[in-house]
Amino acid sequence: MKIIKLTTYRVPPRWMLLKIETDEGVVGWGEPVIEGRARTVETAVQEMEPYLIGQDPSRINDLWQTMYRAGFYRGGAILMSAIAGIDQALWDIKGKVLGKPVYELLGGLVRDRMKMYSWVGGDRPSDIIEQIRTLQKGGFNTFKMNGTEELGMLDTSAKVDEAVRRVAEIREAFGTTIEFGLDFHGRVAAPMAKTLLRELEQFRPLFVEEPVLAEQAEYYPRLAEMTSIPLAAGERMYSRFEFKNVFAAGGLSIVQPDLSHAGGITECLKIASMAEAYDITLAPHCPLGPVALASCLQVDFVSYNAVLQEQSMGIHYNKGGELLDYVVNKEDFKIVDGYCNPLPKPGLGVVVDEERVIEASKNAPDWRNPVWRHEDGSVAEW
Image: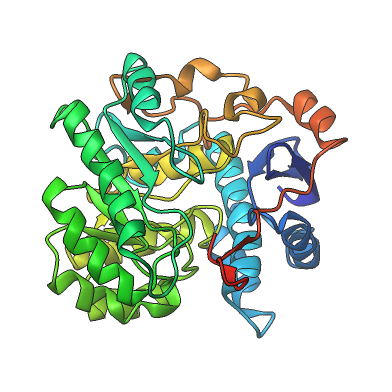
């Protein structure tokens, strides 16, 4: 079997799917994308075609190493996202050829079902109580929300009080019947992170995500020493070589690699295993589409330390397209009592509605996150 063609499809709301075809008619799907940089990743995928065309798709490890090492320059959001989507598609092909889900090829199930969580509140958290109540009816009891709006490197007590008030209202309304994580989203600099973590600790959030930006990772152990709140990070880290330094320094309780950004299934399995050796739990980042989620679940179901899985159904970013819009086997993705069962079909377990993908790709928007500014006019972290 040989790889004969790679085709990319940018689709709403902000995703890109990749189809890899073989000379024996077996097709694999991947999801290589950086939100807001889909065209750039698309070019990177095209530039990797010469490493792939005519090659045996079953040699995933060799093809991965070729894509990673043969170009001399390596790593980073764009190149690793391109590799990630290609890697997903290669695993999809392998599973389909062998007639098994990918998790069976990786040693089989380590759990029977996977805990899922849902976003609430949007970019600027609002109407959170009502949104949680609505999602509870669908069986969810675990949520994540943005912890703050714009926050200066040194900001006011009023801003701190507003963030604390929002969390206090959730605990008052729901007590301990739900759990929720708070995403600082890189909006919080180290001086304010200390203050916020101390003020929020009384409400026992499940975790605080990206308490500071990944480029300030030296603060993770320092912040962890002064709070009992578990700290999570990893969506803006792209290879095991980045993660190894963070793991060695300590501070994280939860690691969140993205299966469409951090080198795909092949790389994220290694990151998950490294995390387990440091007693760090795994909760893959996934505000993306169906192939990305299917890939995350393959890793979740073989990783002992996987504890939570993000998913994008109904997320505030989804304008013009929803995760299941592009899926034929929607029932396999059903969430019951907050859990998802192993996807039963071979490969990644997602049957892509190719006709819908092609049609949607004809008018795909170029999604961009908003540019926020502080009161003094300087650019704010979004």
